[in-house]
Each structure stands twice: as C-alpha cells, then as structure tokens.
Length: 240
Image (tube, rainbow, N blue to C red):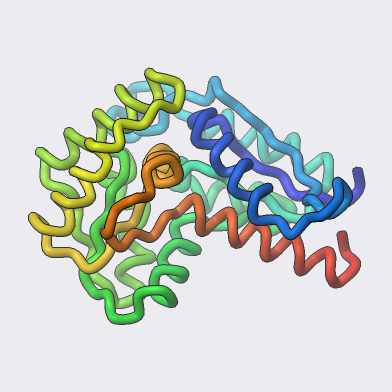
C-alpha cells in the first residue's frame, strides 16, 4: 500500500473503534475500492495519560507514542491522526517527530465549533481530569477569543465515572442517563453555550446516546470528518 494515513489509537480501544466506524460510515463508498487506505495502530498498552499528567512519577506515555510515530515514518503515510485528546498534551513533540502532517484534534475541534456555533462564547469542556488539569484545550479556546469553563468537582466526578467505570471497564457500555445528566449539569450549572466532548470515550457516549437537546462539539466526530476531508482531497489530487 503506497498512499494511506496512519491512525494512532488504542487510547482506549473501544473509542478508537468508534472513530474507525464513524470514518467508514461517512466515506462515500459504493464498492470496496472507494474506502480509504489507512493503518490503525491500536497501541492499547500505552500508559494511562491522565495518571501521568496528574502524577509525573507515574509512567510517561510520550516514549510509547514517539516510537509509534517513528515506526509510521518508515512506512511513509500521507498524514497522521491521533485519536486521544489527553495525549495531545505532547502534541508539539509528536508533530515535530513526524515526517508528515500531524492533525491536531483540539485545534480542529475549536475551529469546527466556531463554524457551527458562531455566537457561542462560554465553552464548557467535558474531558478527563488529565486534559482539564494540563489545559490541553486552553490555548486553542483562548486564541479563538472564547472562554473555557471547566467542570465543577461534582461534575468531574460524574465524567470520570462515565469514562472509567461505564465505558472503559464495561468494554464500551454507555450509561446514557449519566451521560445526559452530565450535559444537563454543564449547561445549567455552568451556564455554557456549547460543550466540547474533549475525550473520545465521551464521543463514544455521544455516538451511542445522541438523543438529547444539548449543543455539543464532538472532538472525535470532528477529527473523523477532517481525516476524511484530507484523505479525499489527496485522492482527488491524485496523490492517493
């Protein structure tokens, strides 16, 4: 396979599966050859991102991801995408190690949010404690002239419970009631205009339990669209 893109995934595996499923469903295809060429690196044994970001004495996940980037460089993909928001704490280091364009999930999410919700000013961020505490999204939200509103401790506890106890421990099972309760809490208690789903497990919850009235910017859905857009653009230009 000569022309393809590389997906750095496995953080977690069920959320990565959701990205691939969405990507394939949205690809305009009527035969096998219409689908996209890509390599999925499901690196499930990457150390937990939040554990390290909250306690730097714990195993650092950067060396594993740098190794993935270096291995993919040898295969010469057209671009790379990493489907984990929290891992973007090391985006600059990973992008610098990549020989090809490396998509930026938080940046793409904020850009898409601005287009879809141009009047939004107060942006709620639903994400892991690691993403919140290390301010993975902060620069992109601030540079857009928007205000980031982080979860209260009580809301964060619900988010953590949904991510780790519902989805990760139960192999992709989604507590829809809890997910919708989190969205309601953020909208009403924090008075936000839109909620960024800044964790791919929350994106999986959105895929499986989308029946609610709350405005969200789904980072995984957005990066899937961007991956598709770029891959189709390259194909149209006969690069792929």
